[in-house]
Image (cartoon, rainbow over all chains, first blue to last red; front, side, top):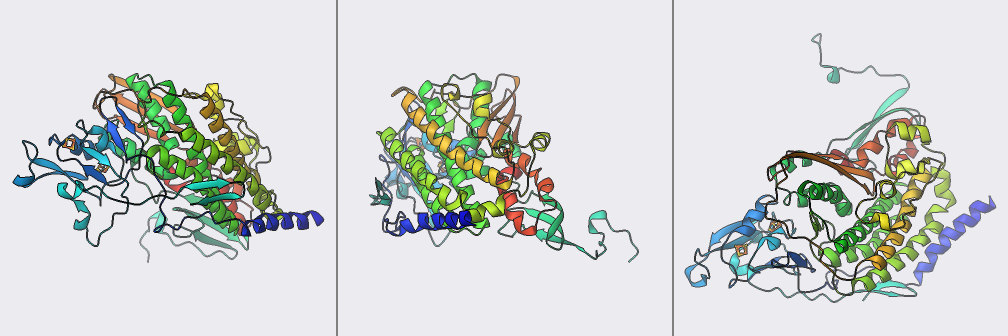
Length: 166
Length: 378
Ligand code: SF4
Ligand code: SF4
């Protein structure tokens, strides 16, 4: 009986201690966790990626040759990439086709980035993609060329009193 | 109504005492599955687990994709443990294609797989807490998981489905000064989970609810073919990291925990001890890891197997042994892929454990089997 009582008191005590410590959770939309690097990139010459967040893609029009390798890579994954004709004035390559990505299907695996041999596709830190319609999730080559700006600066801080986000 | 009904549709006679209850598939206490229990008053007379509600055809899907594009979907059955879910597949493909993996990549894989094991167990523990009505044990693991998810996000860029392991190594190298951050957060994590003992594992209320319920003897555990934490809670010291070390586990000191009681309490404590052991392994791996070097060998695009060949590889996942059998016929796609999962093997024990138990003990016994419905259905 006394064992039970002390056990329960110990359990309560270990919880009560946490009243005095700082909160660990993150106030998400206002604060965002910091991520490493400039987004997920891939170096085809060494065959190794560079660590970074896997969010929405970014397409460098001046590097893209319209080779369709990214679209072929995605065929077995989600069929999210379609090669579309770009208008004459944006034309960068001979075939004038470039990838268009449907974020309703994409699973953010990054295999298309690994497949691109010309350093044309990167993944950025913009992961909040939402839209009122299905069509709004389809990003055209022109939309993919824009570099997103997302402020992410919170980090996990560990002190001797506990961990917080700050 | 004289026409013969098919057996499943025949109307059962109402018994005076025995009542049949369907727990699930929508019930929060069952996951994506149904448990058909027959009760006499408060006591369970018979129980029939009925999985299969989340069957996705992972094995069939694998036959239509090549060895690389199989990666993102094969980790879906257990997204919290996605590195371990991919591990046997990747090891198998490496053997099929005859690839030698760089040393540093092996260590990175071990670190990722141990981090993922902890992430999975924390999620499992959170649900175990809420099944027993212990809401502190839901909040704490759900929060503390974040420390390790953050580490995995730094490594692979994604929070849950990492797609980080590939045949030939890992997708990218560790970010700069990862070792330092990892050591700091894993140390803190270890300190935090030690606090769980006072609030949960030494709590007399938990002990009185789970001790001596659903006892699985050593002989039965072996005979039923259970694996992982269930097997080790029944006193059998069998851990693939020790018995069939893969990658660099040979060079690391693994002391996998064993308890001999075989009741719900032991089965719920083993995963917690496993986490402490995982922290230990991560620290060893960080120390022994080569400080630089390649992490991936370059593959030809669309790698093919060499003619008719088959390979079976297994690893110790968060739920026990997880095996992957790949048959290749020399094409770019596997001819056949079969997964042998720990969840399904552990579920078999449920009818034996629940017989004669109170209905109120069902959630604790069921979840102590370390069962993940989506993995069992593949
Ligand atoms: S990240 Fe994966 S799913 Fe998304 S477009 Fe690229 S290959 Fe397809
Ligand atoms: S993004 Fe890369 S892989 Fe895709 S079409 Fe352009 S150059 Fe080819």
